Structures are given as C-alpha cells and as structure tokens.
Length: 530
Image 1 (tube, helix red, strand yellow):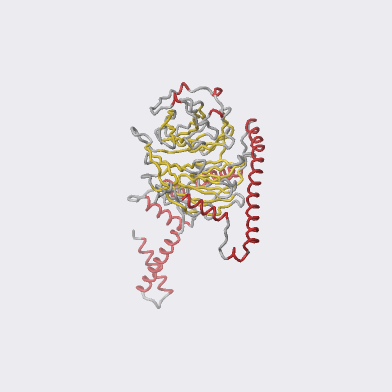
Image 2 (cartoon, helix red, strand yellow):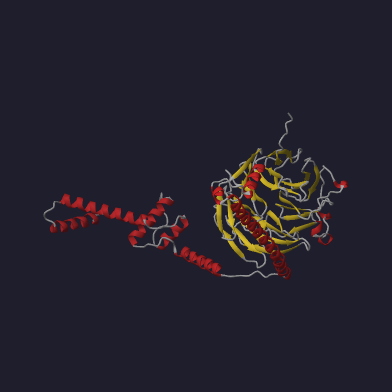
C-alpha cells in the first residue's frame, strides 16, 4: 500500500529533474493525458479484434491466456470486452480458442473434400434401356417439330414477298399491310378476352377442404380434382356433376393428372356421388394392370403415388419410394413413364408398365417441387425451393442447363409447344421465360402480387399463350412474344392453387384454398333480332 506512492513520487522527481521548466501540476496533467490516450488507443484496437460470441468459447480463450474466466458481477458482454482488453495488453490477435480453431479446420477440410469428390450412382439395365428407347423416340419427334417450324417460317416469308409484289413495299411500310399472321393474332387475343366465369363448384358440401389440383381429361368432357381430404373426384365439365370419387390417400392429395391415353369412359354401374371407402389390403398387384388401363394418377403427402382406373373404385397400383411428401408429378408424352418430385430433394422416374422406379435423381439442395417433360420426351425440367431450376437430358442423364434468376423457391414449370421456350414461376411473385437455345432468361414478367402457384402453356408452334394462377386470388392470361397480359380472371375468394387448360383451348379450370373449383369459358355473343 505504501510502495505505490513512493514509486510514483520517485518517478515524479526523476521527471522533474529532466523537465525543470515544468511545474509538478503540469507534469501530472501531462501524465494523466498520456494515460488517457493510451487507454483510448487500447479500446480502439480492442474494437477491431474479433472475439467469439458464444460465452463458452470466451471463457475457454480466457483460460488459455491465464486469466480468470469469470469476475464478480460480470455478465457475458463484460466478459467479451475484458477478453478484448487482455488480448490488446498481451499483443494477441486470435480470439478463438485453439480447440474451436482445430474443429473449424477439420470441417473446412471435410467440406473441401466433399466439393472435390465425384461420385456416380450405379444405373440398372432398365434405366439403360429407357435411355436408348428415349433416344429413338425423341429424335423423330424433334425432326418433325423442327420441320413444321421451318415450314411455317417459309410460308410466312413467301406470303410477305407475295404481298410486296402485289401491294408494293411503300404500302406495307406505312402500316396498311394485311398480314394474315398479325390479323390472326389479334383475333386470338380478342377471343381470349371473352373468358368469363361459367360455373363455380364447392368440392364437398359436407366437409369442404381446400382443392389442391385440377386436370382436364383428354376429351375435355371430364375433369378431376384433388383436395386436402385426400380424395380424388371426377366431374363432368359441362354439367359440373360429380360422377366418381376415389379414396386411397391417407394425407392431403397434392396433384392429380389425367393420363393422355385415358379412355375417359366410366361404367354406368360405377357412377356415384357417394364416398367410397378403400381398404388398402384390396389393392391389386402390379401384374394385374398396364399403363394402357391407367386413367388417373395422383400423389400425396403420404409419400405415395396411386394409379387409378375409371372402371375400378380402388387403386390399380401404388408407387412407393420417396422419403418425404410428394409435391408434383408429370407424365411423359408417350404415356408409359412418369416423374415425381418430393421434399426429399430428389425427383424420380417411374415405369407404369413394370410399376418400378427407374431413376432417383439428386440435384437440388432443398425440396424439389415442379417438373415437366419436354414435348419431344427427351428432356425434363425440375425446379426446387433452392430457387434454381435444372434441365435434364433423359438420354444421357446429365444436367444441361442450370436456371438462375429467381430469388426464392421455384414452384412451377412448363414447356411451350415450340420446344425451346420454358416458363418458371415461384415464391418471388415473378414469372420467368427461358430460351433453351440461348440458355438464359429472355423475359421476366412481374406477374402477380403473391407467389405463382402454377403456370401452363397452350397453343401451337406459331403462337403460344400462357395462363398463370397465384395466391393473390387471380388467374391471368398472357400473350406469347411480348408477354403482355390479355385478361385477368377474378372470382376466387382465396388463394388459387392450380390451373389447367382444356386440349382445345376453349375452357380454363382453376381451383383454390377457398374450397371451390371454377370453369372459365369464352362468353358467347348474343344475337339481337330487330
């Protein structure tokens, strides 16, 4: 206690001897200022040091530096600040304890090894046979499609040259041309603006649940709906009468699709509006059916895919293998194979003839959601909640195009009939148009105020139209090329979950979380008799 004043006094006398011109008060003030500057400098250097945020790591580092890990009345924030000051005084810059640094180094080395690691999934003979079959199937279809596009283009060029010869170039440049292509487009746009709500139907009056999916039959006379109750129902599209109900899923049904080769015929003895209870033990074996007898395909949160026939009240087969809920399914143009996406971050390829899985494909870091087959049957596009989409070549198994652009999960995708235009929609409220030839996004449509739940193309090789639905309670029709909105269909009281277009393009069906489904049709013009 008495040594400190004696030491200070001795130091002062020494300084006074060296600085006789300054008084003792001045020297004390100078020393105090020097101490303050040194303290401020230490605090400045301490603020620039990185120390752990976890209190356990702070204590471990203090123990390594030989300091007490806790002082009386000290909280976690005070302890982190004390660690900084100790590091400044000792001239140490590393704030992490050695144990934590070693664990972090091991993790980094492991992640680097994982990134560099290349692995292959063994393929089966059935998968090899499918790839060869897909090659032989898709090339003739692609050749026919490209030849048709060239023929249309040549016809347009010949027509333009003929118009120049007959009417003159001057008349065409003044905007007085009679281009049939432009007139035809304007006529089509005018027809699309006539869509109005034809009918609205509640999915189930007794125990209504949100409707998750809707699909037209190939003949447009029937449509199917899937709901959160797990049931699949078939309706007449003209009379809106329920003609059949399937009960097989134990959880929410997420999607239902009509098979492109469906007979669309329901035996009169099986037409009913009463619920049918299904015993899972009565499901027939896979050898009793073929893809030609499949009329409907549905998937559910229960991780199962059911194959239905309109002539049977029970599933004719069940496909299992996914480890988590199944989000979407898609049917190959040939009709024998289907693809499914799941929250297990994979999409899988199934053979309807053998009722077996051909391929389990990884590629998304989060849940895989949307999927669609190319019109030629050669490619498949999958989207995921990781905000990316991927185009896969089914003939080689390679990912040939990574679609980057969405800032949130991508929920839906579809191919245009022209074979090179692709649409995606997602949780960022945007619709993106992709050109497979350029391998980039060519147009971004700020389509909706909320997430885009589904997008579908329809039309021909000359002109494509797009319909989208969203959680903003609307269904919108878009024109191809400039992607301008043609009409917005409003009528749902809740989020719209799915939309479909009939094969002839005369009807649009939508369903939503308001527990209803609606049919939109072109309004017929009334004739007035004078």
